[in-house]
Length: 93
Image (cartoon, rainbow, N blue to C red):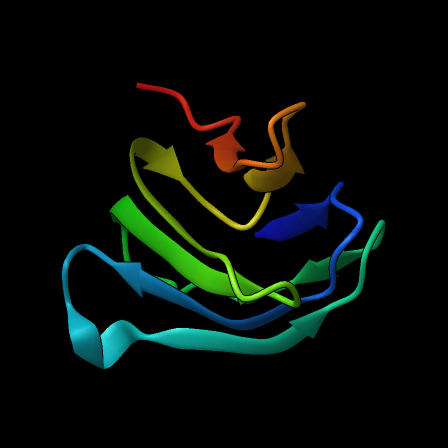
């Protein structure tokens, strides 16, 4: 899965929990501002993923997605005009 950071902040302490199973927790320690990183998902079928983390300004973010999720899926973390972080994905229902 690709994580796209389109914000002006470095993102830290990212967690990815698949199918509500905390033992499937994958982590990324850092995704720099304006860059992308990848995280490898388990080989078993993934139908939901919870994404959470923090921005360098101290703001936390999280969202849960469900659908057909695999290593070609992507998640984009963005910043709106009011400086709110949002998390969206290209995941099919």
